[in-house]
Image 1 (tube, rainbow, N blue to C red):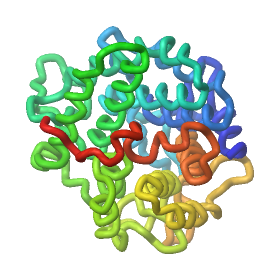
Image 2 (cartoon, rainbow, N blue to C red):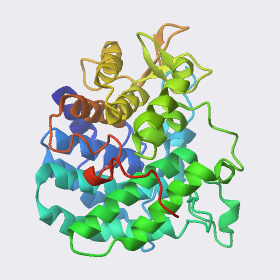
Image 3 (tube, helix red, strand yellow):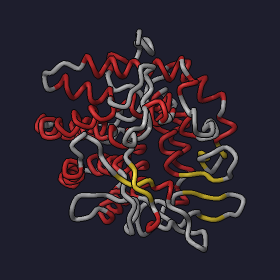
Image 4 (cartoon, rainbow, N blue to C red):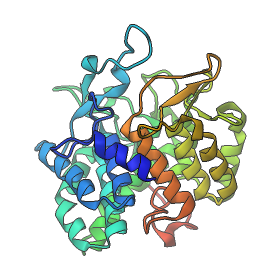
Length: 353
């Protein structure tokens, strides 16, 4: 764990930001993931500096701007990311994820002052997010362009699963500070209802993404599916995504197993009590650990190469958080494993939206 946390500290900049790589690429979601890992590893001031940075960059409408790392092309050698060609992005999921980060910080520190300090950040972020929720319940994936209709912006299944959990965290923060979270709970229920009963509301203009591992395990990871239904859901497609001895593929059709997807899947497995499988999955990632710090992003098994030759901060962060979930290192070890509220674990999956 210290190995990964120290790598994240090395990547973190003086202003508190944590880019993907020392060379660059910043997005608020992966930045928050890295801050969460720092908190687990005991670097609370570095984590707070990361959240202070989000406060500094937050727009007046509550959005947290960043860059789309997925838009960065590979270099001429197809080995490393060309960070100079990344595109700017304002993403609703990237914005809303700070709520889960702040709730996790509070679980680690036990200091109510952390919630008080960052509640304005979370409230403004959620105002932006819910400004992009349709009457059907789903939340558009990005900010609308001037004059653009909300219906013209697609909604992504994984992003909405993540927001489902971020909304839960935002509600818990508001309640812990003595406020009413009814509007946040209603919005969360509407997101969950759309995910479970309105599949046509997702990936309307994008190609279908059911070949992506995140679309497969995120309904369990975020607490939307639980118990026997969650187990059946993961088991049904295990053979498509898991390469035994290597890890979880990012997409079904590519022989590319990745540390981040493997770590997140391990946490989803912990959410349904599959501790042995979770530990096994993390163990398979060991060859991708780099002595200089962190983990390489993934392994291309047909070519038998590390690919790409990058060690993102968020890959290291996902491993830290998964190790915490499996070994119960911090008071926040359950935060990324299903539902956040203990009294909500056996509740019906979705109430009336």
